[in-house]
Image 1 (tube, rainbow, N blue to C red):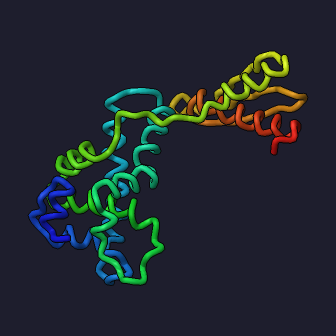
Image 2 (image 1 turned 45 degrees about the vertical axis):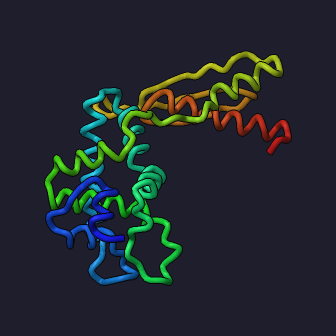
Image 3 (image 1 turned 90 degrees about the horizontal axis):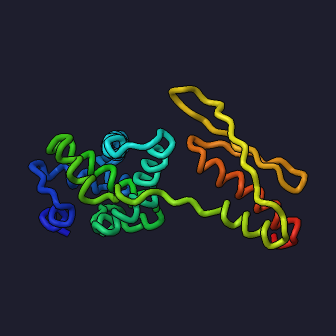
Amino acid sequence: MSASEAEKALGYTFKNKDLLRLALTLPSASTENNQQLEFFGDAILEFIASEIIFNDGGSEGEMTDRRKSVVSDAALGNVSRRLGLDKMLIRSKSDTANKKAIPSAYEAVIAAIYLDGGIEAAKRFALSTLDFKSKPSLENFKGKLQEALQSVGAPCPVYKCKDIGTPQKHKYVITLNLFGERFKAQADCIKAAEQLAAQAALKHLNKINGKL
């Protein structure tokens, strides 16, 4: 793929084409590769994502969960494939098992765009390629646990919450007493902690029912 084709796919035209090539070059192909850009891009991407999510508002835990979802390897891998970065990578013929290279390519590219066009260009690239609208979804373990308890005529679970963090950084501990056992979980937001406690209780229920 030519530089112009890569730029068209990315939606950005580089003034310095060498930066684009460097961002797409893996260590298996050259000692001059994208590892440093990948390192820098990780920090740039986290800053950009944090600013965008902060402007949307929400609790600290919710914002943290959203950012993790947006910049996760899974999310970056998907957008890298959609942009065709996986096919643009410059690597040795034997380098076929480096799965981390695909999400990392996005980080290297955003660093290259930042160095070439500044923070606003990097923000425009992030906004045009990443999904900031969808919120991370947790599997509904609370719902599954309640259904399981209702099926055997057991009462609905009661989730007890305690904040063990600070006013600046909350950390919630959820305690759930069921089947003569105590299940505890903690997270930055109450909903996430409740889901984790319910997951642990549901796993225990499945075990005693012989399902696992």
